[in-house]
Image (tube, rainbow, N blue to C red; front, side, top):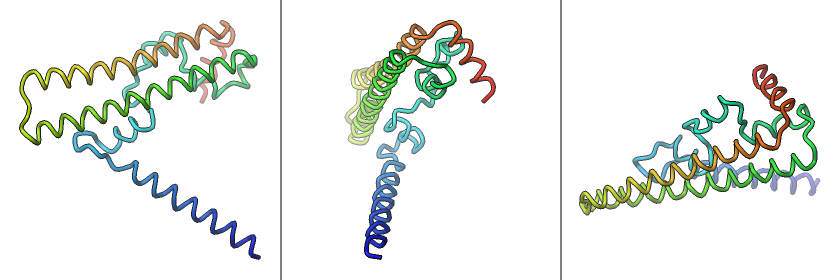
Amino acid sequence: MVKKIAALLLVFGYSYAYAQTDSAVNQSLVKSISNERYNALVKGLDLDNMAAVAELNHYPMPDKVLKYKKQLDLSPTQLSKIIAINTELHRKRVEMGGNIIANEKKLDALFKAHQVDDGVIIFYTNRYGLYQGEIRNAILQACYKTEELLSEGQLKQLEVLENHK
């Protein structure tokens, strides 16, 4: 009985902590970034479909390949390399997402304090573009590297699997 109560308290405590963390992430800390975009930046998600040019030309996202790893019969080497590509891509997205959020916070603070001029605006908007470019580069590089690891047969099988989801 004591073990059951302890387990229940542990589960409740974990659920409460998770809910607190999740709700904290749900609220954008920057008024110029929507909650949806803020969450995407924090979690490393792509709301802008930056991989479209690669995927439309049969260069798959690594996470999609991993989703079908059994059906594609990935070798252990392929699997480990694609996992590494996917892990690095996620790391880069989260890193650049944090940079975009910090950049927006700074812009907001500068505008709020009336400390903007042409140079400040140019600097921070160009910086924003650099961060977006870093994310896009990471995504397209991941697609390119993933495609290089797959055989023609696996690429064709992936396309069939993706069309039947």
